[in-house]
Amino acid sequence: MSALRSLLPALAVALWLGPTPSPAAAPTLALGPPTAPKAAAPANHRSALAKATAPRIDPTYWFVGMKNPKLQLLVHAPGIAGSTATLGAYPGVTLDGFEKLESANYLIVNLTISPEAKPGQLKLTFKGAKSLTTTYELRPRNQDPARTQGLTQADFIYMLMPDRFANGDPKNDVVKGTREPSIDRGAMFARHGGDLKGIEQHFDYLKALGATAIWPTPIVENDMPKASYHGYAVTDCYQIDPRYGTNAEYVQFVQHAHAQGFKVVQDIVLNHWGSYNYLFLDKPAANWFHEWPSFTRSNYNAYALNDPHGSQYDKKRYNDGWFDTTMPDVNQSNPYVATYLTQNFLWWVESTGLDGYRIDTYPYSEPHFLMSWGKAIMDEYPKLTLYGEAWEGSTAEQAFYAQNIMQPVDGFKSNLPGVLDFITTFAIADALKDGNLEHLYQSLQSDWLYVDATRNVTFLDNHDMSRFYSVIGEDFSKYKMGLAWLLTLRGIPQLYYGTEVLMKNFSNPDGKVREDFPGGWAGDSKNYFVNRPGQAGEAFDYVSKLALYRKSHPVLSSGKLMQFIPQDGVYTYFRYTDAGCVMVMANVGKEAKTVDGARFAERTSGYSSGMNVVTGEAVGDLKSFKIPAQTAWVVELRK
Image: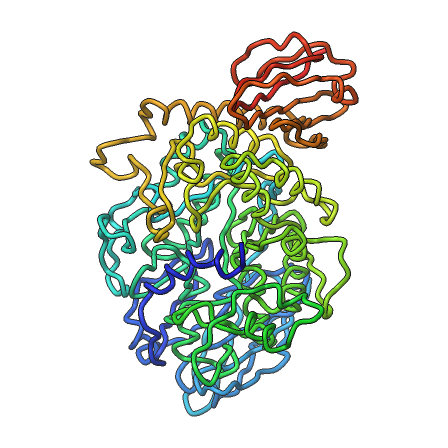
């Protein structure tokens, strides 16, 4: 699959976002309260700046005790560039200077916050054509050791779209002042009303399924005129979308998730913003975004970046071209922009205690920025999990964007711990559709390219892809094989919402794979949270059985992997530790197969029998196996 073809679903969504707006005045939001960040009331985005009585400052507050003492404040107010900035006396904090940008409405203020600085309120004074004084808050860092835990192979990620999962708070369905002030569950690209409360109200469901981590698609503000539900066109980097909740409610969501044993992954976008982002409507400078003589899309082809014979034009077109007409490409080579982005994602971790970042369209960002951004994040939060979307057509190309054994290319050497493992996803689909097990074997054989392939996230489908159950022809036997592989292979498994109850459809357009979860809204005719009839219930139970087993058995969550070359349509591998061993054997053929167990002796030696993890049935003979057609066994070996 080419990079261009793989991104067509995302482009289809982007095309529904509406026209690129003309520059206009941007909103101003108040500073957050001392205890938790809070979303300001929605404002008229075209008049808020003119009516503002205090400047907007990003980050909205900061923290004492960060490892990097430097802080860049972006101050936004009418005519602020004509002012000089001074800092009131504050022990441990110094003003390093201020810098004008092209726009008269911005000023950069640089501070150093020494380790000795205490939490409190800084006093900033701006004198000029329009003089004003404001305060800026420094907060203490949170010392709770349960925050920012990171993810491991012991975790099972449940990915969902907040707008389409469950509506827990109907009062935030329609928010006055937003550009899409309505909901319509019958319209594929409209808002449907799901929110953070809806997710939280179904923690018990996720726990019964065996999930240990929750990954919602982006929850930051997307105040776009159309199709803003998906979250990938950010309009304010420091606010939760009011249709999902407030900043304070998001902090509570993370806290409550942790209390219930869940980790939280935040989906983020580095490469582009929405065209109604206040920093695009009123640009600090023209070079905050990549501009072309006429609108120019990315070529969507990451191969240009490490092609030893490639052209500079193709590289520039890939990195600097716009993802779509309403998604302006952020210029991360601009040091002010790079710092703005880095501080924003440090701010979210410290403000909430989230456990990981999934990075959208990772390879599209400027390569050297990715290196500096990754280092800055991991320096502050070494336990935080980072994994990127690198939707590529070969294992080598995918591995290029994770920590790997390859030589640097043009100075780029990825420091991203892991990536979404698209190659294994494609290989699983090939094995189940065509019986081709070689691709699956080879996708794992290529793990030698990675520093640690166990940090990759494995999956069967997602919000940009046709649903797994449809891809395999709605064949329940194949479904169970795919889930068995997902939950027993190396890596961190991720399940897309609804896969566990056989939700189906093809991504043409992608709204069809982003349907509401049955039962997430009052009055739904079906409620799969409570009652899952027929095979939907059987599917849920199958996933739950394997997920809970994985959660409680280190052999699957941390054991090594040994695979054997597929033979006669049967693929066998083992997960093992010094304390135990699990055998996974799958027959993708249409007939039962007898498998000689002699070649597995290096793993079965010392074991005399086994138990089928799903059915509880005994496996009494490890010397020969008769495995039915289109069946996967997960067998715990016994001595």
